[in-house]
Image 1 (cartoon, protein in one colour):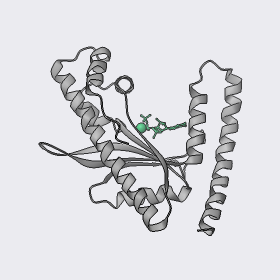
Image 2 (cartoon, protein in one colour):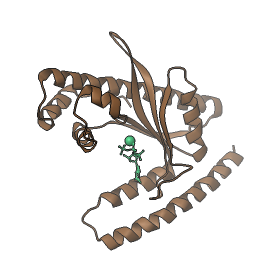
Image 3 (tube, helix red, strand yellow):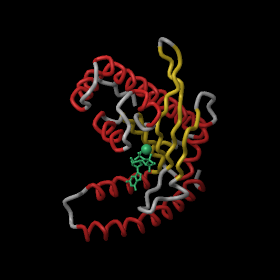
Length: 223
Ligand code: GTP
Ligand code: MG
C-alpha cells in the first residue's frame, strides 16, 4: 500500500488548477497532502497487520485486497467549488474527509464487521462518521460500509489527527460497484438501455447478497 506521494506533481497541479494561490499556500497544501498520505499509510499498516493476525490465528484471510488512493487536486478543487468552499488548507481540514481513502475488499460479508470492530477497538483510532450501505443499501443497489476514521500522524512538531475514508465491501459488492460505476459514467450510451441495465443491477445486487450469504455458510461449515 505504500505508494509514494509525488510532491512536485501536487505543487504543479495546484499551480495549474487553482488560480489565486501564493507559493506559501502551495507549500501548505503540499504538506497537507503529505500528512493525509501518512494517515493513509498508518491505516494501511493497521489493516495489513490485522489480516496477518487472522491468517496466523485462524489460517484465514478476511481481506481479499486493498486499494488506497489520494484524491487528485482536480477532483478536490471541483468538490470544494461545488460545496462553495474556498480552497484553503483550513477549509479542506474542516470539510473534506475523503482526501485519503482506502478500499478494503473482503472475502465474505461477516469480514466487513470483523474488520470494522478490530479497527474501532484500537486506542488511537476515532470514528468520525459511519454510513452503513450494507444493511441499508442505496436506491441504486450499492452496498458498502463507509467509515471516516482518524489516526494520529506523528510529525516532527507533534501529532496530528488525520481523517481517512475507509470503504469496506465484499468482492461481490466490489464487482457490482465497478460495473455500476462504469454504467453511470458512460455518457455516450443509449439512455433507455442505461435505464434498463440500472434496473437489472438493482436485482443483481439482491441476488449477489443471497449468493454471498449462502457461500459464507458453506465456508463456515467446512472450516
Ligand atoms: P461525497 O463523498 O462528497 O460524494 O459524498 P458522501 O461522502 O456523502 O458520499 P457517499 O458516502 O454516498 O459515497 C462516496 C463514495 O462511495 C463515492 O465516491 C463512490 O466511490 C461510492 N458510491 C456511493 N454511492 C455509489 C453508487 O450508487 N454506486 C457506486 N458504484 N458507487 C457509489
Ligand atoms: Mg465521501
